[in-house]
Length: 445
Image 1 (cartoon, helix red, strand yellow):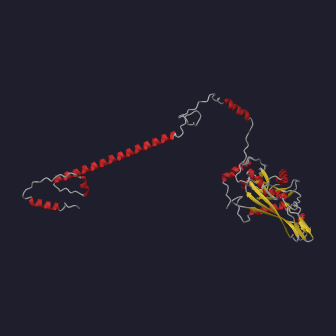
Image 2 (cartoon, one colour):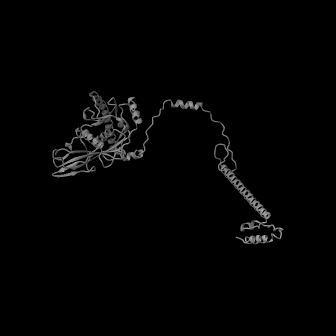
Image 3 (cartoon, one colour):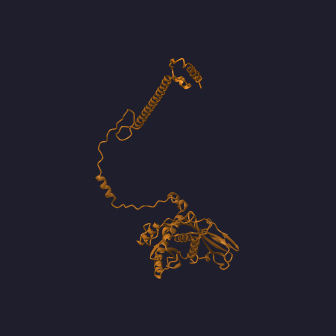
């Protein structure tokens, strides 16, 4: 899925806010988002929350043959997974440019800086060494993935314990945690990456950019440093030209941030060690009662609690005093309970009244409709009878024979007799002819 582009209005708004030294989440220019470090049930599992960015790191080990060029050193392997769960723009099973970039930067930060004693990972020289694998999974993407990944990886390495090994001749025995206590890794220092984003050709600088700020930035500078102020790696991207003073300024800011993060990391490791030693709940079991494993999270809102007692007292003093006497309850029928405070219970009565009124209205409407139908039908019948009478009278006046159809026989009750018409002798044949002609028309059709 392609990345959704920002509109011009959003881009202008972000750049204008950055120019005014304001950020979307209310942070200052050099502030990090809220960081949270938790551990899983097993050793070597670490979760890092950097604002809404969430990363999980898992460390594992296995015995393998060493490299021919370095037979006395163990192997360090780093892998970063960008799953679609973190962002819909990430594709599963396909390495993107971002994943390759993050993987290389993580290798420079941790492996090339020699923060781990790889010679202590050797079991049998030239035959068997420990291979330490660090898998970093992105669970949610909200910007600054590199910093969250580096913190999660180094914390998981510090938390990891490898099994103890015994050698008898050429036989190598790997002991379980129940037989022998696992051994921690030998770590010299803890390098941590700090990201700086530049805007408007290096005019403005921000620490720990979020996802929307990364979309509008012109360049990115990542500095990996330990608490001894030793720069382990540095990388610039975006094609922006940086001055010497800008790089030195970023390195000073990074040294302060790294010391703070290292202190937080050490406290988290000490608390987890103490909890495991006391036999308390840790990892997944600890998160169950606190409901921290659910997907829905609510940010805590700070509420001002100053002068609350005085405000409450003023509100109570200004309110009306409650009545001293409570009205006696009104019971409509003996033996019936009451709902409400001193009022008659009308529960169910109003509904019955409404139903009766509706039924009466419906009956009245039906009677009116029937009366209207009767009136209309009576008027139509009267009109039909009057028309038929008029036609008969006209035909009688003309001397024509009245024809009665099937429908008219039922409606007409009395037939008027034919009146003889006096005609002359000369008109006799003509009358007979007319009569014969008309008699042919008398049979019913």
